[in-house]
Image 1 (cartoon, one colour):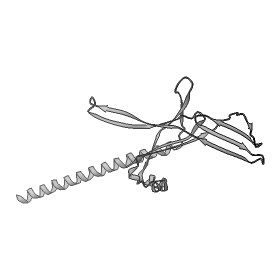
Image 2 (cartoon, rainbow, N blue to C red):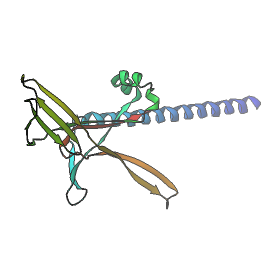
Image 3 (tube, rainbow, N blue to C red):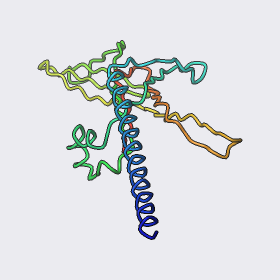
Image 4 (spheres, rainbow, N blue to C red):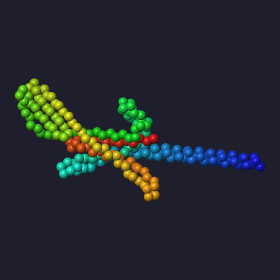
Length: 198
C-alpha cells in the first residue's frame, strides 16, 4: 500500500516538474518571439521618412518639428554600434535606455553690405540669433572668415498613457521622439531614436 502511495506521489511530482518546465519553455519562447517581432519591425523601419510639421511659435516665428517612429535594438547591438562612443563616455550598455541621433544642415543666402576698411581691405558682417559671420578680405586677396553657427534643438519624448480597471492598472507606451529645431535657417536631415531592449 505504501509503495502504491509513494509511486503515485512520485508520478504527481514528475508531472508537476514537467508542467513547470513546459510553462517556462513556453514563456521563454513567447519572450523570444516578441523580441524577434520587435527587431523585425525595426529592420522594416530603418529607412523611414521623417514627418515634418510646421509650428507657429508666435506671430512672426515659425519652426519645423521632425518626428519618427522609435526603433529597438538589443544591448549587444548597442555595444556593437556605439562601442567607441560608450567607452569614451565611460558608459556601460546596460546604463543606456535610449539613443537619439539628430543631424541638421544650416543653409541661407543673405546679402550684406561690404565696407572698405582703413587698410584697403574689405569687410562684411552678418549677425542674427543663430549665426555670426565676419569676412575680411585682405589687400593680398587672402580672406579671413570668422563664423559661429548656433542651433537650438528641443527633443520631446512622447508617451501614451494607458489604464485598465478605472486606473488600477497603469502603463506607458513609448510612441516616439519629436525634435524641434529653433533655427529657421537649419533643417533636420536625419533623425533616429532607438530604445534599448533587455
